[in-house]
Length: 157
Ligand SMILES: [Zn+2]
Image 1: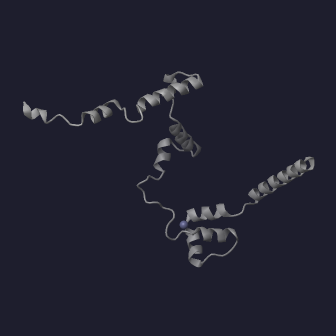
Image 2: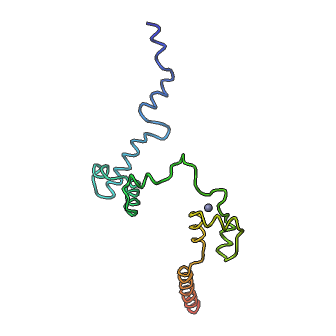
């Protein structure tokens, strides 16, 4: 019978911690339950109703998919995973300086210009960096409003 004794794992206190889930920061399951009870009380619903609800990140993913006319599964299948090699930037992609040059209406070198005709990501970045008439009008209107407001408060001071 003495051979069976060696099968008993050592470090009993460590095993007990894992068993109860109680670590240095308390029981995570108990903390989750407490948070659930708090939220249920705040929102005036039962803990059971709250537990049955879809988690926020799942709901957001579903809304993301719905907005694109996709099922959740199809939308998730289209998302890059961590293990995938990033497709952007490639070694040929435009540098921030080249994007800035484009936005300022300056020319970029031929290789960069050629890449721009083939890379949809660089095209989107370049387009996003372009000054937009609508954005400029919004900034101008806001500045006008602020200047008028400033002049008014300065007159009253
Ligand atoms: Zn590119």
